[in-house]
Image 1: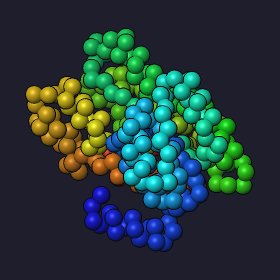
Image 2 (image 1 turned 90 degrees about the horizontal axis):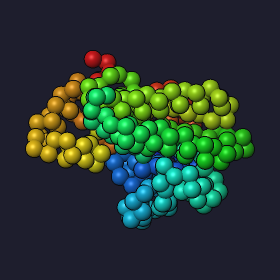
Image 3 (image 1 turned 30 degrees about the vertical axis):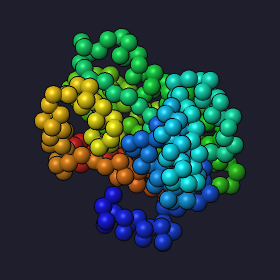
Length: 268
């Protein structure tokens, strides 16, 4: 986060804007990348964060560093793991469905097992996690407290076609559809929104470069920057700031909305 961003964030905290004091939030894939930045931002806003991740060691290290947080082992693809997590949490006000995986390939190059893996992690897991924690979120909205809130981390890949991203585009489009459906299903007790980032500087992107472009990382990284008119990759903290806003009382009239943070990609 830049010096100016830190100054603005500190001013928001001082003014009481976008505060989440007393709220309990769970972030899937919370130990790295956008998830890690989100945990830090929401804790700074006053929330208590459950850092839900299959990488327990990283989640525990993050929880120790931020305070007001607890590591929670969670395999988002496992109903049993989700049930165990639900049993450990008494209250939940905010759910951030952030965990996800990617794949590179056209439909011809996407094998059945590749497609099934993305559906399992990027779509079915959002359904499983949301369904598992739904009773707690609905209680948050019906007990006189601010409505429960779900923020799904989608992608511009769910809004526009991207070459060599058949499975990824398919799954992120489904996340957007789920977001809108849930918003109209529970309009009085649950706010549901999605954020669609462009390409962001995260371990997710670095892993993609290492796997598919090991010999020309710098060239491909430059291409990733160039396709976003602003001329750079996004930063995890920029996505986290939008999560904080959407979870706050200032966003109380927002539900069923899709927010792009993509450096102008989908406007071009």
